[in-house]
Image (cartoon, rainbow over all chains, first blue to last red):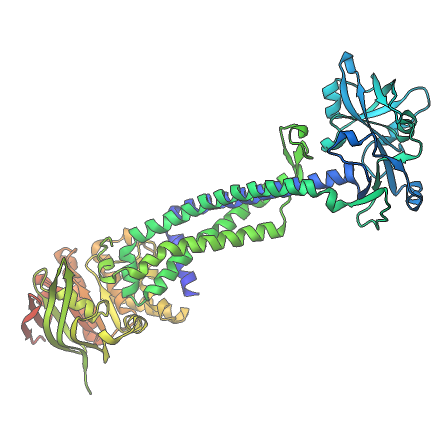
Length: 390
Length: 232
């Protein structure tokens, strides 16, 4: 307790020197927490958006379906098994039929993935109700990125060509009924969405689907020979891997920031021990053991981070809270990243993140403070008293 | 009752110097009683500071014995010698060695904090000590705001606040003018008489020599002369 009292007295007594270090350290606290919060927010938003827009609670895949091999698409479809048809009928399982096709926007030719989905579905966030047709034309919806790439606007007509199950090419005109905005490139880039009934009719595949998307996590799967259930965790594994890679980069940045902050503390400690030799000698003369002086200097160094945490709390809490409410604008198009990334990210600052950062910084500061302080144990007090450099 | 507080027997201190060694103290035999006001007098290099450091348990003898308040310096553990300094020994240094970031009050309070004396008692003891040296009006000042004489008086208060048995003063007047030197010497003499604290000076300053009641002349690490002066 005495060491804490003396350390605090020494720190406060040192005035500006202390506060400069504390402020620098508090910046590190804020930047570390902000960076981690931003990555955490990004991770959560990416996963949530993928669940809402693309994967739902999990998916049944047709046994032949391989999303990484477009040549399998012509074979990866089948009728919905009886055990799942009730779920499809009550809307808890949404069938999606995939097919390759080509569109010709403004005289250009572009390969697309045609996706058929029920207009009434409520499992994915797609504005699929816009796919309801009065029979006059074929409504389609596309994402904003797709619209920008093809320069298609709402109300435009565009020719789409496909090959049915017999290998026969056919073409028709579709109307862009809506352009939706999403952060998930996998439902946007290079894709058009039509009513599944229309796609089945075009493909000559009545009652068939490529995917069946569930509405909730923890779906009790009933695998059949033709349909394989992929749970949400499996479907999120790619993004999890990207997040892991991103987290590794985050850890490196975090470590660099921490090292920079610790360098300031280490530097101060080394300088302190160099400059305060006479003071160290006086402590010993007045009755402190060298071990107690080492402890005092270590606590002094570590206390920088305690003061920094307090200072950081004063300006950091309002600043970070404001950011987590208003979000941070990201001036990059989501398609450039290949994963779901919103135009605005909302950092997530959990208690574990804040407490963890404070504890780690405190521990590292203590170690960094102790390291140079060990030199005190080797100082000759009679030489130190005279202020002789040892 | 045995009033002996310091006993030195055949004390030698060697320091390594290059491939050889330098003998700073070469067979010192001395004894000091409670309440003495004595000076170790000699030129630079005569061994007076080395002797003071050993008596202050900041250094250990190479040979011989130094027994302080019944404790043999060479046999004390680091903790035991620190405990002895904390409770029984006071130090006054040539350049005051005050803690620059502390106020006068905090500087004087420091030895009491180490002894874990409670706050109320501590406050009274600090005020008493500052009253002895006439600095009660400077309690909130920092050392940088004090004159040399005032700083040394704070150092005296700090050394005396815990009522030690022995005060060791290494060239206490070296950085002071004549008036301030006399002032602080009178203060120390007064404390010595009132509290019966043993004062031991290492000095070559004539002003200090004029005040001490026992003069021990050191030369080349040996006691050249030891004389007691009767004063009223």
